Image (tube, rainbow, N blue to C red; front, side, top):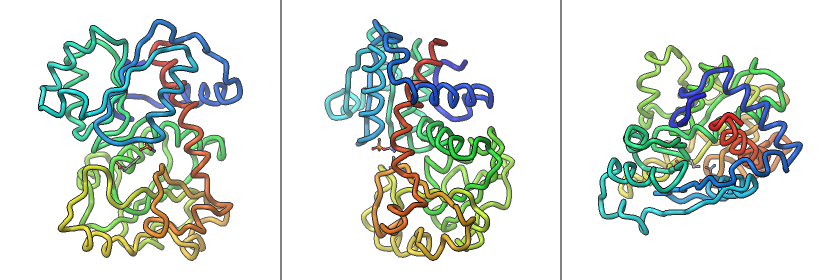
Length: 300
Ligand code: CP
Ligand code: NVA
């Protein structure tokens, strides 16, 4: 088992299946591993805002009898440009694990190289691996396999990147509907990942026969450019999940969103709160998957 999880690709298919199985067991028995993290201290180092990831991780750790320290960007020397390498070499003497949400993915890699403890990516500009592990659990709960098609609609971002990596590992089909103008680094390098011909500018072509349609915010944290805002919103108008769009997917298509939702932008309110939506199940499942990840890191 890889000790750090910086990318979905740090895990193999078997390890992901093991985590999904364990998350299912932990969902049924909320007291399981109730003392597993006693004597372990976790640093939650968050450069960006968070509601779900921060609270679910803190709660997961406390339910397993571990301790947490929260450090935001402004309270730490990060905001005064301390080198991440120097922080890593010191902090690994104080805590047993760092769960970090950062602007630059590269900072996580540097942290990992200079620290002797597990580092968990709680979102970076390039990936959101634990979110996607938990989403794999949610989809597996419904389908009981990975023989399905998922269409991601909207801005190709950290969530999309982790979904693409997960599709390669778990074997599900993926298509993307996204404006070419804003395509992200991973999408530009799709050929290198071995995934071809999956990006559509035509949203209805992309969602054809989809079992799951996934969307996320049009502007991720750290992507905000004031001068470009109006142009960006105009470009993304065509990439909204609407009730009409569902007609092009499978009849029982499920709608996903990692949250926070911007109603009326990337998704219509009627759709987000319809019977097709599994958005709140996704959010709930984060805590069970996070507990499974923590248990697997130390091979409990
Ligand atoms: N899905 C997710 O990561 O939400 P938060 O930004 O609230 O943590
Ligand atoms: N792509 C979004 C995800 C938020 C959970 C962002 O990075 O802001």
